[in-house]
Image (tube, rainbow over all chains, first blue to last red; front, side):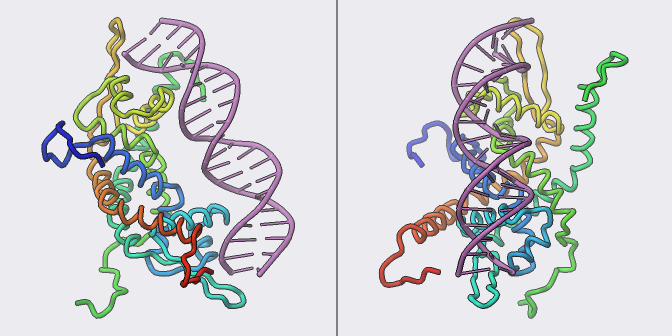
Length: 140
Length: 140
DNA sequence: CGGCATCCGATCAGATACTG
DNA sequence: CAGTATCTGATCGGATGCCG
């Protein structure tokens, strides 16, 4: 951060690019397609690797590993290895990871509530774009 | 206070995969690297194309156009064309777009508040991976 | 069981040039 | 000024095979 901002006063709702970049950075991480699902799946408690893979469904082993690594790197989940045979690895949310659930669920609530509006807007946008006034200009 | 920590608060915050998919879908859209910056930049009011480009900074025309198209398609922003010379195009948030700001800013607040913790976790993760300290060879 | 390495197609994203 | 189109490199992401 650079001190000496003579631009604005202590208005906390100012959205400087620097602040937006922070949001963008975090969203680039947790806004990832799979990260959010992993965090939500870990709500109930620790889960094993293949357990997560099965619960989420549709995620490949590669992506799950990659996602868990990213979350572990950011301190959102912990990775506990039990060196038995067969080996057992448990993933669990940290306090930081659990604190993320509140804003994420708020966003999820917004998504769930406004999903019909978004779908309607999409259909209208595509419809207007595809069928202006010509009788037979139906393109995909 | 609560004798049992595994209570569900009797609320409906169950995280079924179907619900999580909805969150994932929305985050795939607004969790985009640039979409969130555009929405935040449009907070103060309507902006022109190059005005947005200059305010955001670091975004190419291609990405800004693509992002604005996506937001317009989802009904989050409106595109108003004034057929003058030179042409003038204004982008403005819709009611749906403005309603998105609350949860996004909540997430932004979380990001801003926990950024030090995340950066520290990243440094520790990378440091442990690259330079194991002497005395505590507790790797693996 | 958990995880890594590799190959390979699909998509993303920047730079550039051109049009109305 | 506000786009569109194209080329190109980078990244994403799945499938497979191997190892501890």
